[in-house]
Length: 453
Image (cartoon, rainbow, N blue to C red; front, side, top):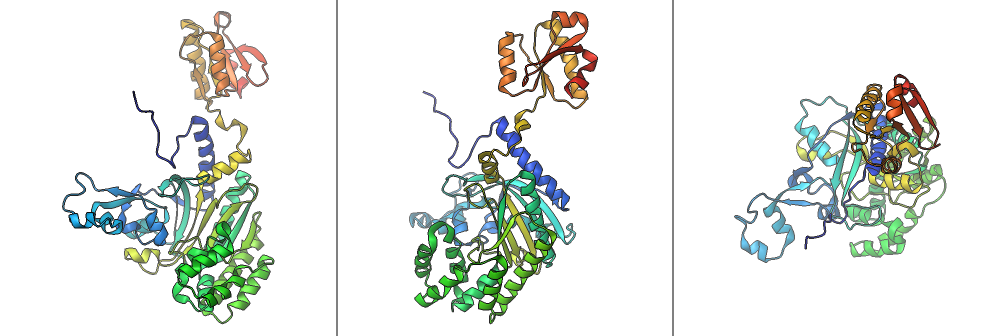
């Protein structure tokens, strides 16, 4: 018996209707990227593991899909390493490449590798798939698309302002109400100093970034497991529970971090960005979240996360400032900031809120019935006339029963059916049926373009 076909967990097939909806998202985001002056690039699906490892933190490294070396990948590997059952030792010996985890690190590699060709500041966007060896669940996939926009070669906070405006524009065009949460890595560094654990910054950020998922009590347990003292945990708790308006929260955290140089700088950066973008006008809700860390080691300044207000799902966009990322590839001192749109989660939001345009699945506007050899030839000529006018049209390929052909048109939500039978062939006319209203009219073939438009 043949094995039933399947696909790996965390991956999906997409039907024509789903692809039309996905392309609606990609096209909307792409148009906004162009509107804000970003240029497209693409990078390979695979990168050298040396490019990827160490850029996403300890947990991120575990989620990298590693690609076995070609041919006999065990050749030359010390059997003792394999017998130790030590994954971290064995993996580099048998895997030199990995599937990209995001688009930001490959972009940094691209900038360094092509620095002679890149004009700074460099504004680029990418819309490509990424892979993470995560546990599949609702809204979380192992293969998914990201839509990234980054600018490198500029320290100006106006770039953060522009990114927030771009986020707002994308979700306004998609019709999704969102909340944009902000924080700053410098604020987190200041908090680590304040609680007496500056060397535990990564441990603190990894733990508190989960507060929305697991709650403060579980976060405190994880902090203790990561070596924070009871005093440090107690000092951290009230900071994570600061409330009030955005301005009030900034004032409160500013007062708390007044004696921390790095913390104070982070607060002032947040104040400039929030005040500037608010003055420009923003339809999205803007909020400060001091627990927001996004769990990635390469962020050094502002951190951005976007949540849908009317649909329960994880973040649908996020990003931040990274000052040191290109340095690991031999190009220090190049600052960058970027944002990534999670197209797959955005799809789920639009579907759940019924925000996709009704006409989005109908790629063909007119289908002609096949009522015989001579009729089919005349119909093909009408199809060519419509296509020349930019109207998607086709002819049903087989001279099947009319009921079957009409059912086919209906199943694909094709709005118009063209009929050229014996009478129409003799009269030089075509009958056009509106599939939504059921109305039909007989017109000269020469008038078909105007009738459909």
